Amino acid sequence: MENKKSIVDSLEKIATNVYELFIEAFEGQSFTISGYKEQKLYPILAFILTNAKLNCKYAIGVFDNSSLSQEKSKDLLGFINKNLNCCSILTDGVTYYVYDSTGEFLFDIDNFDIIKTFILNNINIDNLKKRLLKDRVQKCTSKYHTLLSFENFEECENGMSFKNKTLENQFWRNLLNIKGVEEPNLFCKYATLDTAYYILTNGTFRVSGIAGMNDKSEIDFFDEYCKTDNSENTNDVFISCGVDDCDNLTMWRLYGDDSKGVCLVFEINDLAKDTFIMHKVEYAKKHIGKYYNEHLDIIKEMNDTGIKFNELNKWKHFFKASEYSIENEIRLLYVNNVVCNRNVTWVKTPDHSILNPVIDFHLKQEVFPLRLKKIVVGSNCPEIDTNIRQIKEMLKINGFDRDNVEVVQSEIKNYR
Image (tube, rainbow, N blue to C red; front, side, top):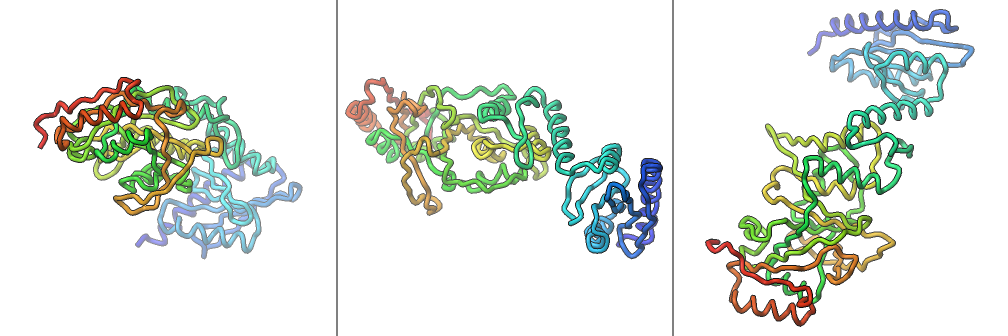
């Protein structure tokens, strides 16, 4: 247990230094300083700063880095609120934490001159918070000037946000492309023969609500890493996962029914930028049991600075944990909205028995960004020669022959 006397000695030293700093700053400024030390409190209520003309009063308290001192800081705030009914400023001699008369935290700052200005001018707290917010955002945008421009932000409730959706979406694309990763030009979907039959028969492509994803941790990874709010309506966001390699042994094993299925190869047309997003997934790395990702660290810093993201619930699904990096995944994401008003149906997922919304898009629709160009049939597909002929016939019957869809057998011959 920490030595109580040493804690008190440390607090006394901080209190003396802070007292002298305030005396020097406010001497002759119509302020009075009352030496109010409450030895029963840890940390210490060092003194009270009062200006009768401005009708303002501040209780100045000190604490140090000891766990006891930090733990007891709430007791000090409670004492001030109950007995003094005034704003309070707690400090360790370096950082100043400002609270209103109810004990609600307002802001913290390392610059004593700002605290001095705040007190001398009896500054409106809301205006000061806005000014400090702009300063923080400006420093953040300067730090990441290749990604951000302060001119692209505006004030919003409890922070600052991008001025419009286009600017924010471009930021996310730039962030994901920062390592020179190009956006994909192929979308390869490994599937069972049953799924291929459904797609060719109906001429549709299904996107599923993210609540029914294979691994539930995928939904929460971004929020847990960046400490962001996970309050989105998951039934508005739909997703389909693919890769850019149409004949990959690992993908056949994981998603191609052990090579008894097919790989549907789609070319990517111009995306409807407001409704569809497609990009390669970025994977965090792991070291000594802890995930790290420099781009997620940028988002975390921006969030801590006070920047609010309106498109976060779209783009956060393009970040995953390192354990999945072998997949080199591409994600096609669709956000259902009132303007598009797509027909949503519900299914029960086979893997998790979750009731989940799905949307089936017609492959011939101009709004849909994928065009079927090739089908690779797995080397373990039953009656492979016959099925290849039958797939070609289905394509012809259902109007895909005009798209010159190619049907080939997997080149992986030694699958076992």
